[in-house]
Length: 349
Image (cartoon, rainbow, N blue to C red):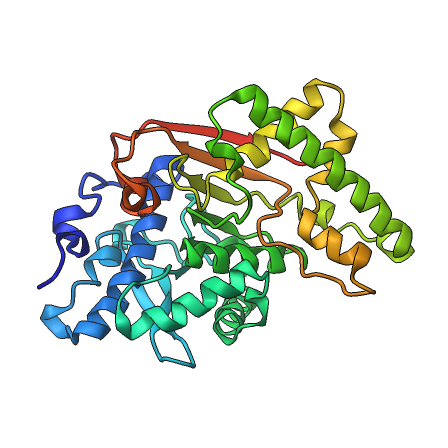
């Protein structure tokens, strides 16, 4: 028996009958729906729902997208991603390769973890890799990354969007960062992306929370300077600034402890500027304590860059109350029209 949440006609954004591609809510809602389409593609596979019984197609067809390719994991053969092509009605067609109305030509979407036996083992393995900053070493990421490279090489970065939720947001973020370092800046929608750190954002006392963040920034900046002293070559390397022109859209919920730290990560920069400690924070925000500690004491071992380190972002915070973690972490919230959303642009300088 299919869940109501899997049926587009019962839980999808049916109110979006006419998409305005310059409307932030419309763009976010379509991107989230396409990610949900990947979830349902995998559920259709698991439940052997085919043809008229399949529930996935309405999640993209409603917005005039066509499924071009499924991305298949090489270990458990689950569907973890999809490539969609925008195919509007003939009255809206434009033969040019360039999108002139703000719409994408292609969207590459990645789902998150599915807690069902057929895919959970492999998904959980990927979650562990994220915790260890090792997602880039996995075959699933390489399959997804190659699909992104090929699409960008074929149609250009301006015609490709990335989208993902949870584990899939981590995939899309890493793919986007990889492409940005090559000078290709892709539109990206990252829903509930994981940020693994101490849950400082859950502290209610603002003074205590701010004090902890200041102390963390000072320690991190100090370790960063120590690491530079041990590795003079790193002084001339500044990949963080190179990424600053890429501004992905991050969608987070304060009640979701897996992603809520992004709120403090970006807001803390502004506060440090206000108290005259901007230089410390600009250095600290480029590093993580764990990675720096390994660089300083790890006998030359260079830790992988933590995934969550981002210079710039369009941050959307859902301030609407959540009944539980499942709702706060769910993707359905991102197309609902009744949410209390706060949007902020953060640019690294």
